[in-house]
Length: 457
Image 1 (tube, rainbow, N blue to C red):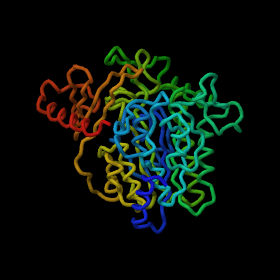
Image 2 (cartoon, rainbow, N blue to C red):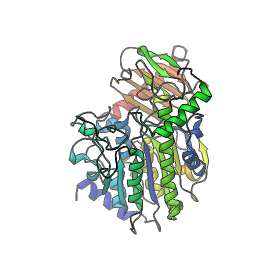
Image 3 (cartoon, rainbow, N blue to C red):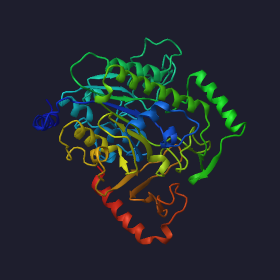
Image 4 (cartoon, rainbow, N blue to C red):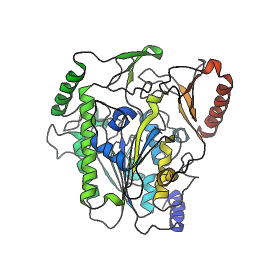
């Protein structure tokens, strides 16, 4: 037994054991923006099952990803730490970067607490065999490829000369079968295993990441809907920094079809839990790894995050604000909550909700959300911060950012001046207040600088 596992096991053995441990279903969606669900304001996409989930739990309207791109956020989800603490500040493209094996993950925490653990779908935290989820506490893994997207959303889920993007364990599906359906099938197989142990399942869908591909009949449905609502008008692009473009409308039929298919498959999982009599003893977290893909150099992305600015890979709200719903019928009351929360918070939250002691020396940057889920309490005042010290293909250039209350500071990594926004009056980050709020800029720069010094590996 490794040292990290031994220390964690000793902690678990000293914790009070829950009389009946709840199951955990962590629905981790790829590239889904805050505005991509109807309950958050989309009028083009149809998401009745996600909306129903929100109606049964707490919909966090100011939820943030740990980073504006995927791999760093995924590292934070697994550990409760800011991604730079693990040396992961960019999406992983080579074999040298991976989630360090010495980190204690959610999978290991719940395995040691008596759960059977499963990981199905996108991992993107390392390419080598020794850094896959089965080496990080997940006993059952399926459909985990070695890249950040699938080869194709249609069987056989392969692509010539791009083996790392091929999705494994799905060879039984006939040509043309849809990937999100297949991944959900594997999740149902895991949930339906006859076992006396509670389960912890991370169902990490590849949708709605590129390639933007969806079942033909759904695409045709949304082509007709687009024609009815918008006629032949083209989608609207807004000029952004560095000669880039941001999409301003949600009317892409293929993307809308991907969203609806995803919603249908989430409904399949929830219905299965109901049918088995498990739903009221299952904590469900629905969240995303970064904001929606709305921003590209010339064409914009397939979705829009309006009224939020920009999208995936950028420090503006559209790049980091994400949909998040936490549901536990019969235990968590339905509500909408505008407290700012972040990816690192799920680790301590799930520990507390399942009767374990929190481990702040592990999940250094997360706060338990239990007070927000079970009563009217507030979290301690804190700021949230991000660092993305890399260029991105969408046109983003290195920058850091901090959110303190409703004040948001973005500090470019070069000598460009800082940008300051008051999100209470300007959620779309249209008016830069930095020139007239010099003291606030100085204050936030100081906090941001200290945070970077404390967290950078």
